[in-house]
Length: 346
Image (cartoon, rainbow, N blue to C red; front, side, top):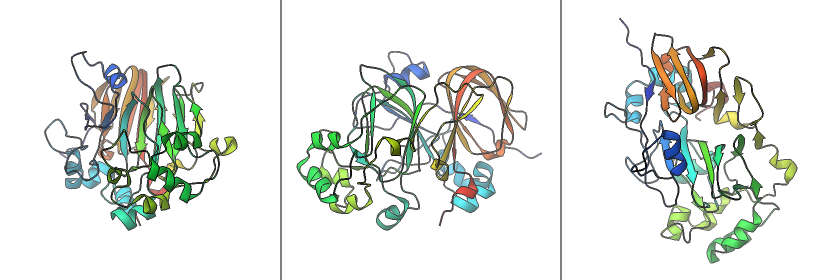
């Protein structure tokens, strides 16, 4: 009898970070007050932190790294069409991120820049699904308000003029249900009190203009490239209100059983849907990461598997699980890599 891979419920996976936060993640997961939670939880991760061997990787309950399990059975985990397009990479990194302080002004490389400088097929396009906020004024900072010169940005980085960097960015108040797509190169920061489910390409390439008070050295900011080189992949163009509408969505009032959460164009890199089944919802076969935001329900797979879904649960779902269904009074965020036809590893 053929044995099929089934969904796996995952424990928290929290590599060390340089900033404060974590209470919102602990609350979502129902952690006891004695448990220490950091500001990031890397869910279903086959990606390491930059320059590290294992930090960031998800360890499965049987002790195996998820990355190694996928390499050993790539078709079962990812599906043949995915492999044809992206190889044995999941093409996806999902994080829970709780900003207990404002994050520094930074940006991420494009695919082409990452190929040249990091020998990677993937840059780091990302998206934020805002699932909670707290504090007096939760905000995000996507893109420069007006076009600036690369020489000006280089000077900001050299002098560490944080007020000038932050003032140059758009400042957008946010609430749960808002989503922000961050194309590679777009300068950005996340403000204090913003809790997100974050989808990214599967790398840890962050080029941090505002390194002082956050990182140990400027080298940590430019990843050894020098800021002048790093800024080559920075989008210094202006993002006015009209242009921002192309990357920001407001989904809080959408009561559909399935809501496509992300802005147009992001599906070249990843997909995210909010599932609130009014009846039984059918899901097509796909590698996926599930984050249960609220309620309780049941995930059933094509091969007879049945899994309880409760607030704070996270699952990694292999392609081999086949057609699945979700039912119950539950809210789930389903994160997936790009559809194979949308993405080519070359």
